[in-house]
Length: 300
Image (cartoon, rainbow, N blue to C red; front, side, top):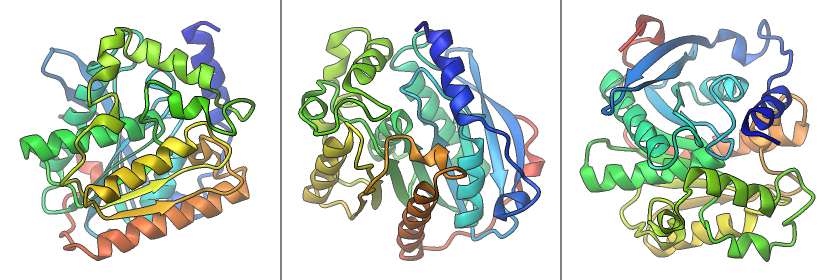
């Protein structure tokens, strides 16, 4: 498929008719705003505010292989996250490959985290993402550690790709036939980092990165996912580096379950387990004071 065809297929599978008039998501409000970038561009963010606020804020980076996905495809998941964790969620619609290859999406993700930190000071700040978004979330955490521009209380990584060589994924028992394949990942990496030399940089080849002094981490994988084994290896690498890690395997699940919560009961149950693990991490750190509500943020 062309990139546009792939995007339309992804949107069609991720955006379904949903009722927002019942359940915890009904009490979550959302407002879009725009963040300017250092290169003169901009991207959209959607800010979700829950009815009950525990002084937390999450910068969320959506999945889709750096090419697919946007704030709309992950809207339901972010609403569920905001309601489940009583946290403001800032979902970043970073610019995507191939129009904007690496490092632009990562730089946008970093800019989103810094904007969140400025806009919601005093809160326990989580950097989070699923799939390619989890890959960039880890990159954002590395940048924050080195620059000290943002302080994170925790990071949440849902089925992250961390090995651009695809050596681990190719050897995985479920490399083909379960929604995401190794060939799919090769296509995504080629569009995201078209220069093979870029794929050796620590911000892309995360298994080669120095991950010391990163925030407490919740890392979740899916059993029937070619990224499962490298996710588990990443969890062990973090743990060996002295990072507090809560590893949450996903028996019976496929890649992308975060956007399937309304139609796959097991995906919803596992997401709740992941949220509970993150909640436990946040309760072990300082509780932030509630800041301004998202409705007040009409633009940057």
